[in-house]
Image (cartoon, rainbow, N blue to C red; front, side, top):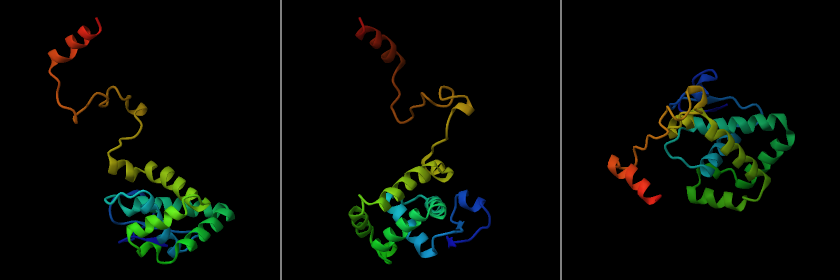
Length: 168
């Protein structure tokens, strides 16, 4: 079992934001899970994103390893090539170690799980402010499509007539 600061029971602990999370690994060891968590954080570094979001990536890799012995062997060999101290190294050292494996099947597997799992999680959605798909909520037009708070306000008389004059 790979666990965070506090262990909270059940599946809810995997998706609830906060510092409490738990993860039962079926195929990978806790050491391998911790190393994979560090690999995922190095591939997609977001300092303020909870470890629980990265734990979902580890869970997805563990599930894939449980279903396919080739994936299990690939993960084990990849982690072994990174070394037992990978998670405790500096970020620069971890980046260099992963760059050396960029063309490997291990790196491609982990990167695809990071991109496909991490950024599709409710934890990441909440962290980055993504509200999810809009169709079930009435579409984008009624949900801030034209809400451009990051741009300065344009005076009304500067927007309409100038557009018409440039098109003549």
